[in-house]
Image 1 (cartoon, rainbow, N blue to C red):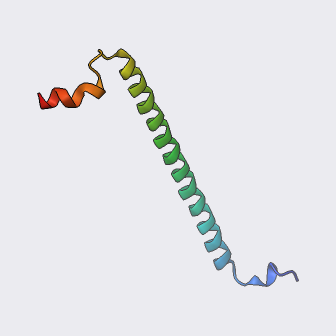
Image 2: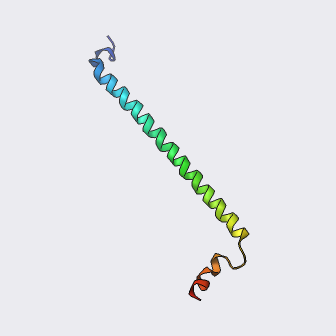
Image 3: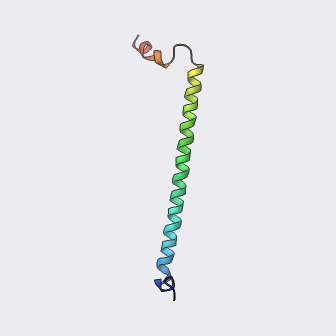
Length: 69
């Protein structure tokens, strides 16, 4: 008999399989969430860069004196 056959009833094996599959789902969901956050961050950076190019000369650097006036 091999070590695998002597490991006991199939209950613990099925439980380990469920843990493994569950961990795979959790990791996949976390990776997808990370990619979504990275994509949103890149979109915001691109919007800010395009926004700075399209603004008038009185841009964000001059916003504080304008608010104080």
